[in-house]
Amino acid sequence: QPLLTQPPSVSAAPGQKVTISCSGSSSNIGSRYVSWYQQFPGTVPKLLIYDNDKRPSGIPDRFSASKSGTSATLDITGVQTGDEADYYCETWDGSLEVGVFGGGTKLTVL
Amino acid sequence: EVRLVESGGGLVKPGGSLRLSCVASGFTFSTHSMNWVRQAPGKGPEWVSSMTSSGSHIYHADSVKGRFTMSRDNAKSSLYLQMNSLRVEDTAVYYCAREPRGNQDLDYWGQGTLVTVSS
Image 1 (cartoon, rainbow over the protein chains, first blue to last red):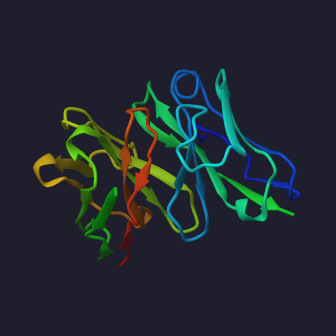
Image 2 (cartoon, chains in turn red, blue):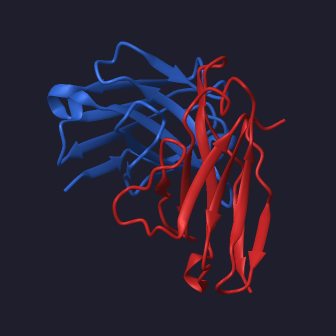
């Protein structure tokens, strides 16, 4: 049973909004900050969101995120073909004292 | 410019050992927690280990606990991962990553070093 659960895939047409969910528990998402990463094939994961909802400089405001209880969500508005990638949530589990990644969600832009 | 450069990967037989290194530049290494993250072929990232800036706290994933040891030398801006009793399932690209805020957010990653465990 993975600690963080993401849908394996999501899809959207260009210009639409897509939401990627990340479900955890009280010992991880419920009590810790969540980060999100974007990864294109053959490249290194890139930090997209930190501290639940903050964007590093250079990340477009089309990418936003939030956290509520033991779940977190990443929203991408105005989806572009260039957004096709794998997206991962990540946090710390305070009970197990381990870092944990979600299984990842593949975004397909139709 | 922040740079993280890993080295030390390679082909090793099951039960063997490897020592990975990560040399940091472009920032004050001694004030940052650091992490090792691995990614097996076709899989998502898997957190392996993390260490606080002073080295006072070290954490390891259950999958590597007792076999892998993380260490750092702040004077050399270097991070290490000693990997013993390697298994086929340890095959992956290993990345070192900087944790700037202590909140498990990893803002800079190296390019990774490939570890292949095979007979």
